[in-house]
Image 1 (cartoon, rainbow, N blue to C red):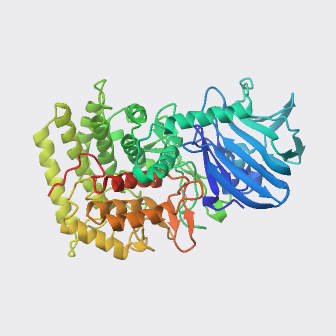
Image 2: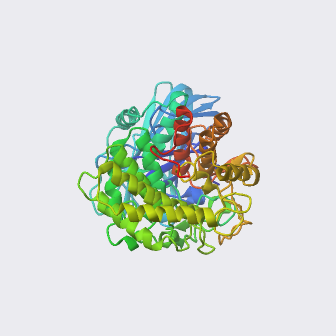
Image 3: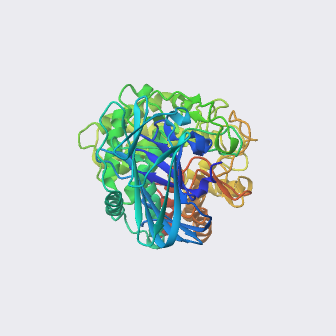
Length: 598
């Protein structure tokens, strides 16, 4: 059985990803991209579906883990009765070789070690052909080939490969596993220790450019490093998470593939990186966006593949039993065909912020795109949609979707004013005011509370964004009533649910955990409302939910006390970063330049 979600740590070369457990087992690995079929899928099945274990061959008394500061280079220290060893794992940032490097160092005593490698391409379904040459082992399955290199002798053992070795103090052993197209020559491999140090320096140089964030600087830097690790470097696309089908409810069906680039998630990531000073990432994302949405405005999707692919068909993987029996295991995501009006607001907001930060329309292409998106939104904003939470229970008039349609027009107007761009400002301003009036007429109930959808009574955590995007002033009575209602009716142990499934037909069975990003939104709302001490207390509780290496999943189960959902989740780390920045600023607006519209 796979470990608990919080037992894993992320490795990334900013193109693909792996998850390593506290036991030294890599249970998830995708090559050559985040959304490629996994060659290790034990995370969603058993060791027979692929994994790579390096660990002491004797009982372990204690395990300590850390990332080298500002990096995704992982150190796992195993303490045993015979001595102590340190396992250093990383995915070297690409030159021409795609690989995982693992270096084991003897710290004290003499520790017997074991290595077990089970390569199973295509989500654990294929047993590869194996060839040995010059001490290397090559695994081939269709288009994929993996090459294992190590000075430690490796032997076949049934359907796996194993090794046994002993490390004394100051001794070390290195292992490299490299991917390449099977029709191409095997890649040149480098010294493992050299690869580890080169990767460490790359990450340290990148993270050193982050802006100081007061007492939260280390926490913020750690999360920004995760966000960088979820960025697909060749194109600038940003994936929502490194995994598929980690459940929102253990044993349930709320299991989704998050290894794609949602416009919403990517824009939130972009704004967090912008606020931290990483303008190069903003420029790369802008170029990715221009390529991905090329075509008619009515063809814009809410998500794309890492390189901008549009077709992301959803299918179930029948041979994988799922994480702790949570089925189905899904690949692809059918939500790519949904209408989600809020995406227009998030994209326009991000482009506006990029322009404010100086990452503007240098080639004259971005503003025409923005104009086309606004004009298309003007035609469709009155339609019902599936909303930010991608419900599968039917479209409706979600209040948050209409608020974000207002944001799209508001940011386009500000951008045109800022850069003196040609725009039908009078028409856009009138439409912005019309949307604002409609939301307040139909999206507020008799209690003065903003509700999930027009004419309904259900609450929705996305409405915590109303004061943060400037739709209403933070001290507006409707904002106060909404925050109070959410705290009273939409929280578990003080943390925020997206909505209550028993009050919202989302087309799915079962429940889910509290949604961490929504809890960070509550922090932000409290701060801008002048309740900073309350917001800080909640923020500190949220930070404490991170695992031992600072990672968060999508959700938290307050009863079982464990993380839920895909991991690590960009949304959660975005919330952590932005709330820290807001707390450091002691009440500054979440989005620079956001103005209340009474």
